[in-house]
Image (tube, rainbow, N blue to C red; front, side, top):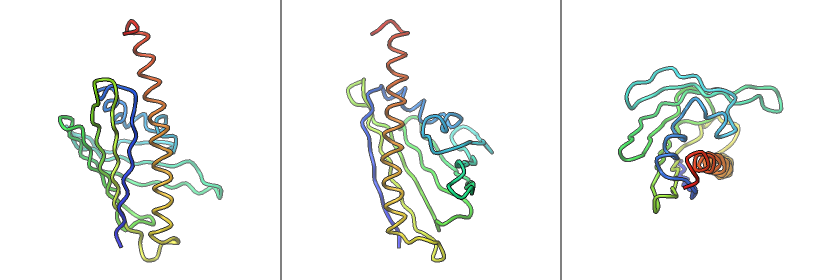
Length: 159
């Protein structure tokens, strides 16, 4: 069964800044807090492929996976998909940044996935895990982008 999840957050920062920071893959470990490392495998104008590695879990296991994404800077949208083994049969993520009044951004994540039949958890449990985690990651991302926005306004003359 396919599962569909949508999460969004309102960020008190201009859309250009939000887009730039959210797309800076090298800094995802700092922005999202859930990755130990990111290694870029391929990048051209709009497409990238990279390996994400999570910190060790309670048992010391380190999970790693590959993500491919296509970015559309003009529309401020990203389409991504997870590649390789893991508990998910497939995972696709779309996200978009929409400017609101010049000083705020609505960041929306749309995720579609299905767990593999042999996974240790089912779709409902995975949905709960992903939905809760997405809300927490979006809130952390919001706080970090707003912090950069405040610092840039101070450095830029307090406008």
